[in-house]
Length: 320
Image (cartoon, rainbow, N blue to C red):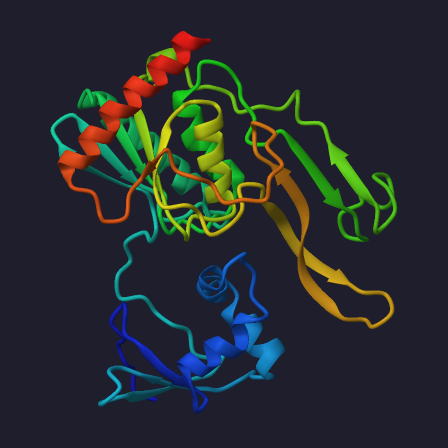
């Protein structure tokens, strides 16, 4: 087969003859997320598994790509690997400067399990630059960040701490044969409660701590570990939140793993853990920003929000 190059963002019109929109509508009912938008977006995380489980598609795929009036068909088989033309790291944190002393750190994902060291180095380098350039304010953008590992969020949170903090006030886990440590934690089906009071995120050394005001941007696609990050920053008064309410609830689930139902043999990829935000609020509701923001903020708006963050956080500290 002749090699073909697909530009990032090329639209997919159909897979195996099924129009993409019809396929998304069919698969969305099996995906995870509290809203239809989240469920549609999260399909991309496990699309091959959904195509296999729900559609029975394995082996060769006929993929129609390009504009609707001039599509090209790409045939893919498991023996043929997709080869990236650009070897640059993907989805790593990106630091920019809307104003001379205002830093903007975009974190596209916390899903860094394949290479956590590279993510950790990127965070360390970003904050080293933030200190070197004497930033007086910081905006962290986790809009569209659908989560990953809570440890990745912790690598950012520790940059602002003066004492250890936890990302959740309570955690429960539904045990099964894979996570009950051969019965030492309990029997499959039982709920196990975690005591997180002694476990916390450790601060960086004082000279590396960022002490300026911080704003975290969130939206309806900030999810999972992204929500844990946002609620930790808000509840521990490390930052104020700006943007739109999250699609997912403030209290999140995690540790998705195969769970086999004993009677039917059906295996589902099911979250086994439930987390309650640091302030202990049990209400089933989205994360609400302190500042509502609909449109893309300008540099002046970002600077104004950072200034407001400084005032609000100072008032909170004085009230305590």
